[in-house]
Image (cartoon, rainbow, N blue to C red; front, top):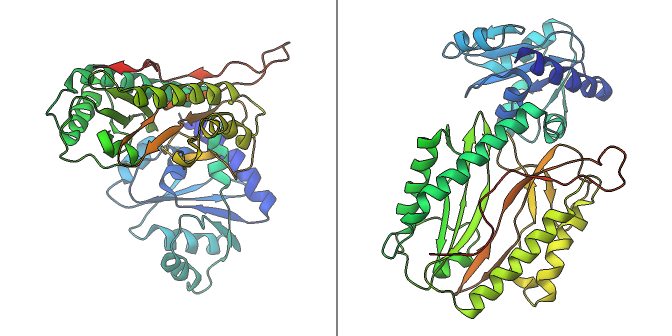
Amino acid sequence: MPQIHAARRERAQAEIAALGAGAALITSRPNVRYLTGMVSSNAALLLPAAGPGVLATDSRYAEAASRDCPDLELVVDRFIEPALARLAAARGLGTVAFEAQEMTVERHAQLAALEGGPALVPLGRVVEELRMVKDETEISLLTRACAITAEAFSAALPGIVPGRTEREFAVLLERAMIDIGAEAPAFDTIVASGPNGAIPHHTPGGRPFAAGDLITVDCGARYGGYHADMTRTVALGEPAAWQREIYDLVAKAQRAGVEAATAGADVTAVDAAARDLIAAAGHGGHFGHGLGHGVGLEVHEAPTIGYGRTGTLIDRVPVTVEPGIYLPGRGGVRIEDILVVRAHRAGAGAAGSPDLLTTTTRELLVL
């Protein structure tokens, strides 16, 4: 897809030029992949404000870089960042913008100390902002990642039985993702049973499932570099009244959040659509995290949907909606889906319905 990556670089170059820099040094791995297609543990891109970019990697990836990025000049060097900084200076690119959110102080100091090297200025999250809006190829990859996730969850679900541990089920689910076609799990699967469900990011351990548990499973497959993210909470045995109560409340809040996630919506208002329902029921103190986030080449991307955040949702932005209630010592519920925000329909006044990419039922499953 060299043409797609070239178009992305052109959009980034416009931002670099507006900043007044001669070039940008792109060092974030997801950003390098987004702009070049290169998948590597050691690659960086020198992107001038105008003209062709220069990709640097070491000998381990040189052949792959030549194959996958034929339209880019290639520099093969073990120490890629100094090599590109020296090249920028040699080509008269006196000011180079760097990704301050990714570069360590130590690495910055090394570049700043280069004799005759370029002046360094922060780039900001320019590439991350470009990545926020997905093209249809990206949405297709994300859709497939979500389909694998749903299929794997369905295949693994019979494995939730009394006596099986959280960790055993996490391994079972991740194995199913790989068998169905995932590159890898998108992140470490969360399986939180019984009182562990009160910990939003619980690490699966040796606790065996037991009748009466609510069990929260937060999982996702990675496909083509794109990350799915889905959470479901199930009941092992007939749930108690308090369990059904908080499940129904979270499900109601989640539906409200999904309906509010339309093009032009303020992210704080989307968060409030779900959070206010939970707070009105007396559980405001039991929902501490944001309502959602963007997904793509990383499992957590811009935008963030939460209280105290700014910005609006726009067309073709995939986001999660994931309210939860967490009761210390008792358990919890979270329901999470990925949707793609869609713009107004042609000739209509209402925003288009979002595309829900995660298809597993949101009804409480009683196992």
